[in-house]
Length: 85
Length: 85
Image (cartoon, rainbow over all chains, first blue to last red; front, side):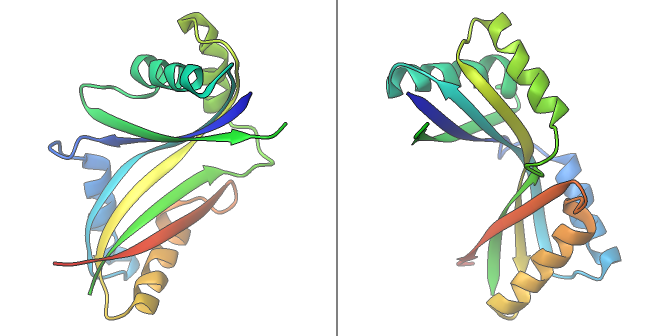
């Protein structure tokens, strides 16, 4: 079976996000007012082959923990969609 | 009114995504098999104040086009959620 995992990796809520902060501060220079907070993370689309949904979830979890997210500073969540070939 | 915009910026489908490609190729080294494709973009949460939903959409569009996405190489889409104060 083939799956598409849609993964979101975001900085922990408790941590400052300097990149997001900089973007938020610069909105005024673009004449965009009213922006209160910006947080920037990663959006990852991963297409994979697995024998079952459980196996696909195991692969996505391992990939997130070992490579895609820095668990100390980031959290991840994902949705898994079966795709037809 | 306050809104939360959930923005996804992704490399154009037609373009190579070298970062995603590298990640996909390295999955094998982590003993994760069956990964066929990885594409990496940005996931941005933006909290903003606007008089109406239309105004909020205009602000988010301007922010995406001028700052958050490189329209030549990336596409963006977003969902806008009203939030209570």
